[in-house]
Image: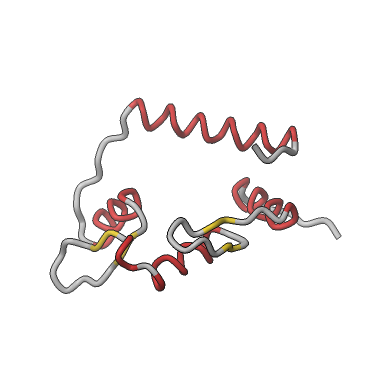
Length: 108
């Protein structure tokens, strides 16, 4: 049966499952089949490596500054930062890599 995906990221995630690409915890070396499971592991097993929300009474931990910034914007109504030219260059670079991997079926 053919599977349809409504978003390109879901297709890439699905392909990675078939390619058996694993992600490794940088702290303890455990491997996980996808980023969601790895992130859950890091938050539970290594909370000291996470960034904590600065607001009193909020117990949120984030894995990096991007997630923390999004948390502030959505839950604590901080104003959004303007995206820089560097942001758009990095986004385009990531997209090019995904397309390259999909076309070439490579893992580097």
